[in-house]
Amino acid sequence: MRMYDIIKKKRDGGELTTEEIKFFIEGVTDGSIPDYQITALLMAIYYRGMNVRETCDLTFAVRDSGERLDFSAIDGIRVDKHSTGGVGDKTSLVVAPIVASFGVKVAKMSGRGLGHTGGTVDKLEAIDGFRTTLSEEEFIAQVNKIGLSIVGQSRQFAPADKKLYALRDVTATVDSMPLIAASIMGKKLAADDDCIVLDVKTGSGSFMKTAEKSKELARLMVDIGKNAGKKMVALITNMDRPLGNAIGNSLEVIEAVETLKGRGPADLTEVCLTLAAYMLSLAGKGTPEECRKLAEQSVADGSALEKLIQTVKAQGGNAALIEDTENFAKAKYSHAVKSVKRGYIVRADTEAYGLASLTLGAGRNTAEDPIDYSAGILLRKKTGDLVSEGEEIATLFSNDPASFAAAEEKLLAATVIEAEKPADEPLVYDVIE
Image (cartoon, rainbow, N blue to C red; front, side, top):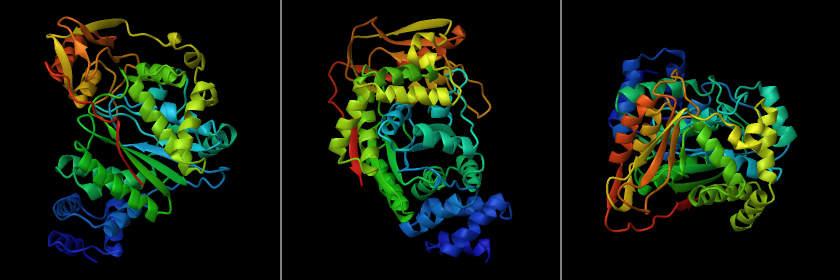
C-alpha cells in the first residue's frame, strides 16, 4: 500500500477503504509517513470530504492510535458530557455533581483552555491543592466511592490526533467536518463511557459559527458514537454570548458554586439543568422532562453542591473555598468598563470577550503559558440589556493593571449597542438524538 495512491484516490473524489485509513493513521502515529504527504491527504479530505463510514473509520483509527481506558471496574452506568468549547462555559462544574448525586457514575477527563476558550482543568486548578492528575487506580476508586472524578486528559490518548491537529492548524485544514468529528470523538471514545451527551456550541464564541453547521457536526458525532455502541445525544447551545456572567478561572468556579446553590445566572442555570436532564435520561433515570425535575431537586436540596465538595476533598483541594467562595484569592486590581453610548446591547463578539480575558492573564496562547487564576471579567450587562452612557457594563480583574487598556479596547469593540432591542435567541437551539 502506497501513500501516493491514497492521496490520489481521495484527491479524485474516491472513497477510502478501512484498510487505507488504518494505514494512514498508523503511519501518522509511528512517523513513517512524512508531513508533506499527511498534509496532502488532509487537504484532499478538506476539499473532497468523507462519508459517514469513512469518518467512523478515521475516528476509530485515531482512537486506537494510543491508550484506551478500561472502566469495567467502575460499578454502574458511566455517563460523560463533552463541550466543543466556549467562553464562560463552566457547565461541567455544575452538571457533573448534579448527575453524580443520583448514583450515576461520572468518570470525566477534561482539557485545558487555549486561546479564547477556557478549560475545565484550569478552572479546577484555581482551587488550591486540587489534583487533576490521578493514577488510573485512584481515578476508578474515587468514581466508585463518590461517583465523580474530573482529571486532565492523558498525553497518551489518541496521539495521532495531536500530530494531525498540529498540521491542520498550519495548513488551513482545521475547518473540515470529518476531521473535526474524528478529532473530538477519537479522544472521547478512548474513554470507556456508556453514554455521552455532546454540548455543541454555536455562534461567535464557538468554533462552529452557525446553527446549521453545528447541527451537521452534531449529527455526524452522534452517528460515530452510535457506531461505537454508545448511547448518544447532542444539544446545540448558544455561544453568541458568554455563558453566565463570569469569564476567568476562579471567577467561574465561584459562579458555578452559586449556581449549585440555586443563585446562578438564568442562562447558565438553564443550560446546566438541560444537560443534566439528558445525561440522567441516557442513564435510565426517566424521560428528559422527569430528569429535569430531578436535577432541579438536586440543586434545591444541596446534594449536588455536597457532591462537588466531596470531589474537591477527594482530589486534595481546599474545600473551604467551595464552602465559602469569599476565601478565593482576589486579583489586586479591578477596572470598570463603561458604555460609551445609550442603547441596547444587540450583539457581542464572544470570541473577542474571551481574548480580552486572555489579555488580563486568565488564559494562555501556548500550552506552556502561566495563568493568573484570579484574573478575568464579570459582565454587568449582556445582549438584550438596556445601558446608559457611562454605565458599567463589565468589571475587569487582573494582577497586572497595565493589561486593562488593551482588554477594555477589545471588550468595547466587541460590544454593539443600538437603539432597537434585539430579538430573544434560544439558549438551546436543537436536540439531536
